[in-house]
Image 1 (cartoon, rainbow, N blue to C red):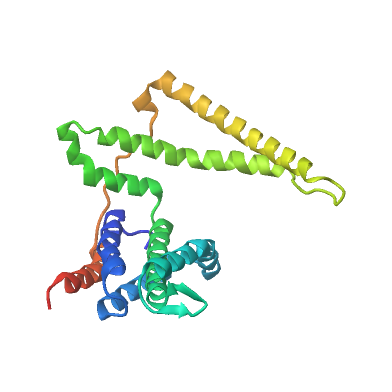
Image 2: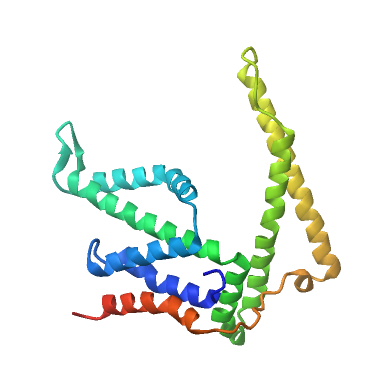
Length: 245
């Protein structure tokens, strides 16, 4: 899947997205979309442990969706002791949480098999025609590409500060010392980030703003039937969904 054209993968994502979010749950069209999400996970070779940790980090969002729908959806109370929470609302919140899980899995599969710079290049192909009307598409995408390229540097600075600091305290130390160490670590990280961005800004001014930004031109790729196969099944599911019965 990593060798497939990013343009075809993004189109397949766009076709499958409305089916997962809007099609009736447990209809055959929606179930077909779920099968395609599972196939995307298998093609991306995402570790199940990594997927589980990612979904676990979203637990509070799922809980908030359950409670929000449960409180504001009229219906039969779920518990007699708590009449504000309705059964219909909890079911609606669970359905929306399930749709969100599928969206996250599909997005993770896309990002696993496609680099951010490749996606920027695809957006350049989609939006390049706006340049004729004076919209600075290439400039905006170049800035986006520059920011994406700078993220690893900022992450490296954060790891360097974290490795050089420790927030562990002995039992006799007060909580104030912990806060002081945390503030010092945060200040060190902020200083490193500002200094790194400052140096890159000076490089931009020295070499010329646009000249220093990374190029978003996408090299030509040879496409074969496997690239078209990436969008074939999502396109069929989408067509069956939008075609009136």
